[in-house]
Length: 72
Image: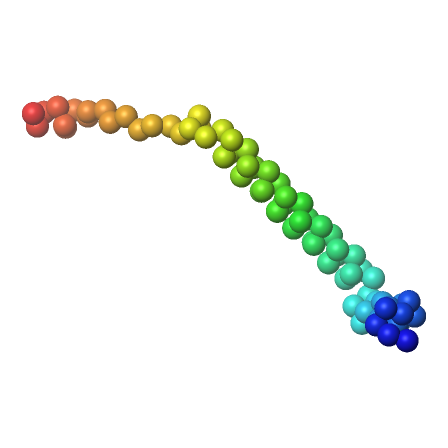
């Protein structure tokens, strides 16, 4: 009877369900799944941005305003 016993893990699962309840465990599972999904989506967006490179960069062009023109 070690840590790898099936009965040991079933007993641990039963105790966890009794402590937290199935609704709370279900909500925690949804939250964890959503976090993993968002993390993977962020990684994919980051790799797509790295591939895009300089195409996404918008360069700033300085335009003279009327106050700048009157000073010169």
